[in-house]
Image 1 (cartoon, rainbow, N blue to C red):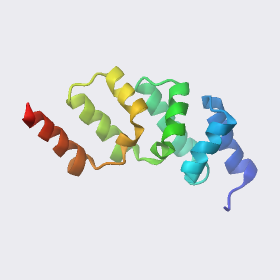
Image 2: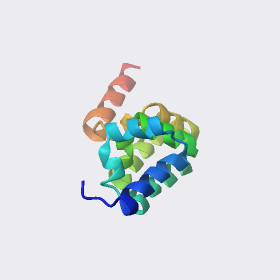
Image 3: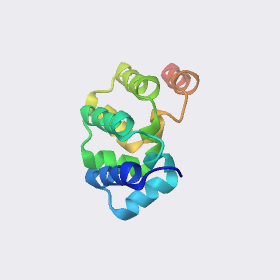
Image 4: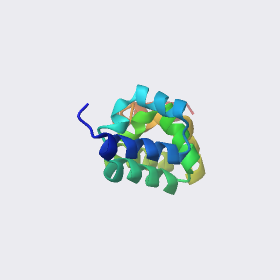
Length: 130
């Protein structure tokens, strides 16, 4: 890794700790998704996603829990992945609280599956069943 300890790694680790993660949770998240501490800008990527999740109704401890469970969510594009899925959930009739709960319980939903090729057709199929 060609990252500065002081300039890159420590600030990201400190941010994770400030969210409420302990050392074992930080290690777990980094093991699952090493890019969390190297590939994404703290100010340009990670903090804006954190803020967006908070605007949806999650608090920092919930964001931390989600990052530990599925750290890859912090690498998903707000415009291409996260916002379209939230919009779709709202179009299905979910309120903000239900959307926040869905994201917290199933963070992989936010980017692991194609919205157009997977999720929407399955939801339509279920709707058609009555």
